[in-house]
Length: 176
Image 1 (cartoon, rainbow, N blue to C red):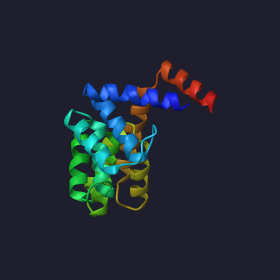
Image 2: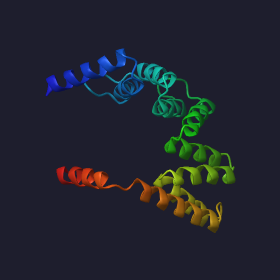
Image 3: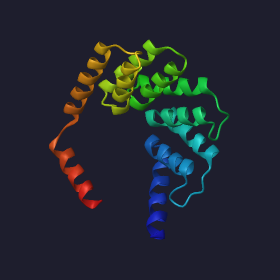
Image 4: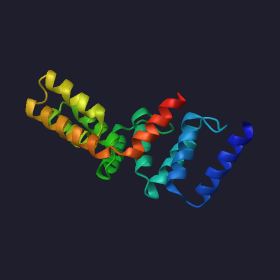
């Protein structure tokens, strides 16, 4: 097993040397959580996320937002977290859009929060749909907004359906 981990790490590092933003971000994740035999190193993770983001990784922008929100490997800075989430959201990252809604909700900007969640629900983000439902129950979102979120979410889920996805899911489920 150790050979497989070493081989995997070597393959990733080969891609990192070629400036592959996805590989750089993946390696950052391994430092962030500790994996592939690497010790947790939040500062190294943030360095890798930053490099991957500069090379165009939307996922790295999201990871940087999380690091700054939590103060992992960097000094906690909510404004900087929002900045990274906003950059990722503008590139179509649904979880970043959800997080922007969360920040707006915390500030009491419920209309702005719901607008963010509507956008991410349209991208198929189930948490956003559930959050709008809760906002509707609490009186912070209208019935029309909830209905729109539900329709947009269902449209996104329907659009993502495919025979290949169903086969992959069945295969994955059978291995559990």
